[in-house]
Length: 142
Image 1: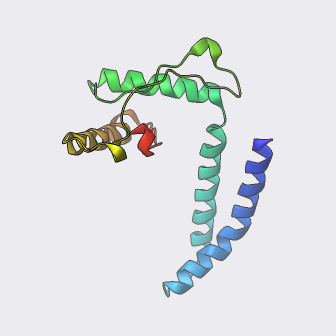
Image 2: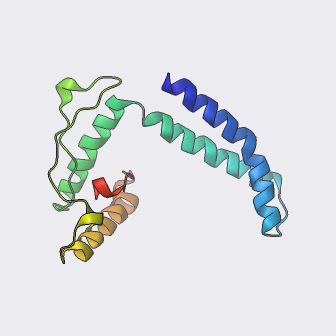
């Protein structure tokens, strides 16, 4: 299944990370310490934990609901998340409502700069206030 594929990818990344770290440092004419390698491997591990968590659709449903609540509590009404259809959520299925809108990268209105400001405000609020970063900023989500 997908978790097996992710585990293999993470294993390969962990094997290659020390080599990549040494090569990157060599290109930048910097010595490589064991701390450099350990830090890079730790970053891969943390990224891997987050990536595996993305496959837990019940957790994703809870996170979506919490994100929406956090934005409402902070009066960021221009930021929304699709409503989760909780009765249909399963381990391998996440069902949300469809949100009508125009992708930000295809919107020619004069409102785009304001919406970019809203997005920046939302990200700063998540980073500095809620402590939880919902980071899926592809054009369909903006």
